[in-house]
Image (cartoon, rainbow, N blue to C red; front, side, top):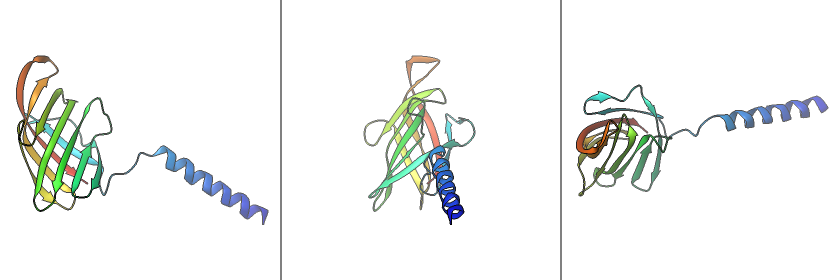
Amino acid sequence: MDNRLVATVAVVLAAAAAGCSSPPAALGGTTAKVTINGQSTGDAHAVTCTQTGWMWNIKTPDDAKGFTAFLDTGDEVTVQSVDFRDFGGFTGTFWEGRLGEAEVSGVGGKYTITGSADGSFTENPSNAVTATFRIEASC
């Protein structure tokens, strides 16, 4: 009987330790491929996807260098905003009806967002540019 108790405690502690060491999973997917001005930003990037009502939030875990995109999936799927923060050397924003242009295609958590964002590149931050982007995310 004592051996079963020790074994049960050991299994519970091992499971708890494993749970603490892994990052939270996204809803059904964990990566996004991104290009800026036709140039790849590298291998697929880790993302987290959350949904509140009809709104999807797709973002990289790094707040300093990453991106955040908000999609409205109500009657029609639309892009509300995309914010790049020194991502692939670009910092810029698309904001529905205010800055840039964007559209989205896809359903069920697999989305492709394409458009343009206003901002600047790291190598010349005082030069305002409009950059094109493409985000392929699985959420």
